[in-house]
Length: 293
Length: 306
Image 1 (spheres, rainbow over the protein chains, first blue to last red):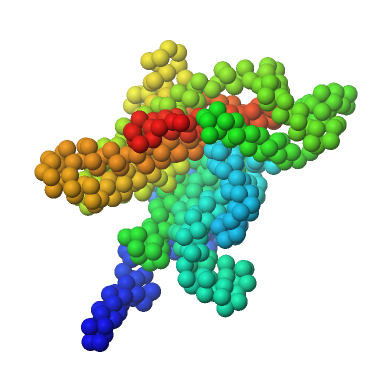
Image 2 (tube, one colour):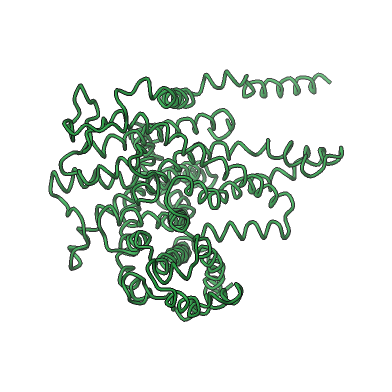
């Protein structure tokens, strides 16, 4: 009797340690704090762009064309005399938006289709996973470029191309998680008390398996910002005079012998955003999946 | 399943996607194929020649037949068969891919292994924080920065082009390959580090140590070999997926490869070439995956081809 009690107690003690309150774990994750702070600042910059940017991102001033960084223009000016710092600040609006909008559809569609495939198996699984194989048989960029080329250049068509293709990664991720999860007892229990399939999938299985996808989505946002920048470089993304960071790097390429700052500095903005998202992703992993540590 | 049947199955899965891609183009494909300024008669002729006046499933069969005959159509801007156009450009892209795989392996192997063996040392920290940055650098940006610093300021490498002769090619391909490697290496170094750390904790490693093997021998014969097996697969998959990287890098460095051809054809609205180059990239992914399987069987003697 007493042996059983002490066994129970020691089990309880073991459990107490990892199940700290969520905010305690948030405060203990250095990754999350760094990532969230930097990203929060970027969002602020995007929101306050009209207030904090020194000048209009599109205002041309030929008397101040292609000037190197100085006090008046901390990031220098481009060939039209536009202030690059102002353009980078306004670019924050575009690039953050691109990253976030792009990730929504693949995330939702991928999780739904992946969950269906894993839960039902059989021909539904075969059909969905065959589609996944086909899409993954092409290099990601090549397929996106081909679709955007067919639809015409622009960020809206990039969203469409991403929505058509990028769900496959999420479908594959959540499928492998659910295949393990659906054998667990709580799923049988949820079904036994009369939950219909949709209820079991959406209220029980997905919430317990979604964390991998959430962590992955952070890295994915950075990937879409890179993608938008690359498409601008290929002439298929944001069109001039848009201050999208990739478009700015591309414009600067023509002046790389004389004005390095035109390409170099917008690139740094992409790197800062990407690194912040990596920290945030690692931080979320610390909190949501402590067993990965 | 035999190797040949595997390739055939993968390819036959790709074909409908390409067909759909052509259909996705807004507007009348006959007008696109005939060119923007073609006469009505010319458009009607193209429509008939390509079978575009037939039902959609017949069009699909036509499309399949042309693929089988390697008849990829006629380039609208170069006025030569697409197949011969791609044959000229493909070697450049393949060289970039091979060179990239080589550089990536040479860089990732020692760094991943050292980072794991000296876990939490300054070296491990430097490697890991550098990777965090290189992973999110846009490849065309790195390319431009390389050109500004190494080619223009120091004159170490040619600014653009492919050169003539093997030595010259290597010189021209080094920066483009290094550029792609920088986005490829982080994934591979991280994975190798994780694999090595995992095998170091495995029971057979403890047994190897317990029976008195030297640490170097344990690492060489027990840890490294087992950690490398999943890593090689990842290398193959990454090279395959980052094949797309050549599309961008070839444009940055002015290389006359299949990727640059694809982009130029998009600008020129040369749709037969766009379609064919998309297919070629898919084919190269399959090829890389097969090569991976073969290398895999050399490292892991448990795997034999049936």
